[in-house]
Length: 321
View 1 (spheres, rainbow, N blue to C red):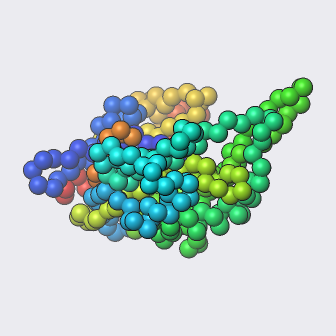
View 2 (spheres, one colour):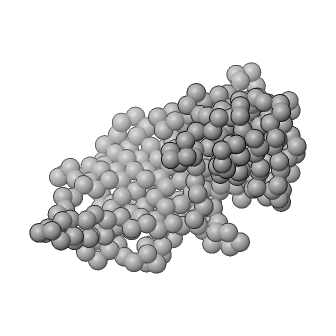
View 3 (tube, rainbow, N blue to C red):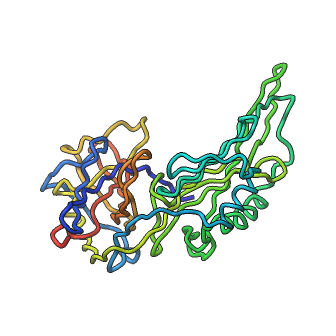
């Protein structure tokens, strides 16, 4: 499974017409300081870098009446359970144990169940992983999500759906009782063959299938989008220049490896390069724009050992924006 690094990128959008800056200014990110003498070695194929990339405008995604009806049926709600709060549609069961939230401006669907469980009340008949995949492939189109918009498996046209066992372990009389409560199917969106890389951008989600294959949880952010403008991608030499000029961001590394002291780094070797998409902002105020960038898988020689880390940098020439 492809490793996903939660990125901290932010894109400033100017008010005069449509113009943008790919200078990453998120204060919580680890910015690589400018260093003109940094030894950066490009040792990566470039076949995955397209000639051009698009900037997309993210739009609301209201559910059609059939899609909403399918969702309500899957979550066992009727019109009498419905309440409105502005643009937000909410449902709540009479016992308060099940809630559903639909927020079209951000393409959000959230369903939660809070049934009390214990070792005397175990979840039963949870679908197998293969069955959960089949259920997800059937259910997603019923919500208006095209399976063709989900990132594909490597060298495969099949949607890349990940299945996780969601369970709990009870300890009774010094014995462990393990209970799988659901199988969660997770997925990410792709556009132009390029994957989204973060939550709350309108392109990821997960669905839990619990007892007897019933839906027990939904967490989806999936917005409509339209193309705004295309830009030519920059060369590997220009990406290297971006790193040296302090226009790149270091991805996360395991805590046990400590940090990277960039002023004393000996070299950076780029082993893989791929385009990705990201929408700036945060879960409480996601951006309305989807921006491309270059994800570079690198090995950094710190002078005290090597550290593998993702480095993210612009994929288009700022001067042409």
